[in-house]
Image (tube, rainbow, N blue to C red):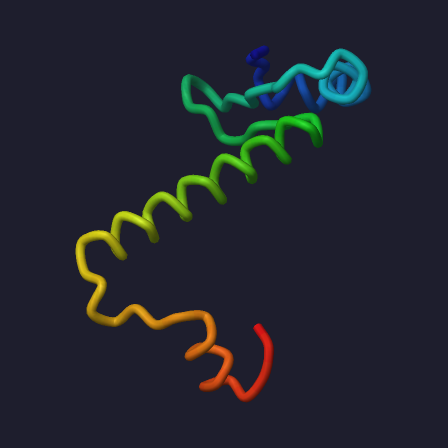
Length: 85
């Protein structure tokens, strides 16, 4: 992962973008000592979104395992909705 200042990224936006799109690097943009943004190649973004989906599914499963009292079957859900899910 590369870190560049916002000023440098602005001065050489084409070069910064090339790092992301051609070299497939994540670029952290810093203002002073603080990270303020990240530029990611689309594949990295997709992977992060997939990880978030897994994390949410794990969280939902843990909640279900703690308390199954509100759980219903798929068939019951479909009946409540008036059709297929």
